[in-house]
Length: 101
Image (cartoon, rainbow, N blue to C red; front, side, top):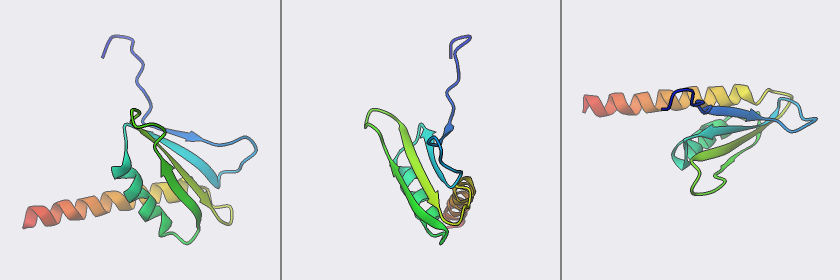
């Protein structure tokens, strides 16, 4: 990396004007369907989620737009964090099982 080069953020939160915290799009840089689909599955298991989906804006870009809309005013960042934590736990379990075998 060149001296003075700016480091890109890994995660951005995008909220529309006038929307509350229950509807947020998270932009995850350097990610693709591998993370997007697994995370969407885990977040959708929460009954407080009204909508959860992701898109890849263009095949040449390595980022995903991950949108969460919740019910009853639940901040979207909570199920997003919970989904990431559960995904880490699942991956750790798979790794441990693989190493034992």
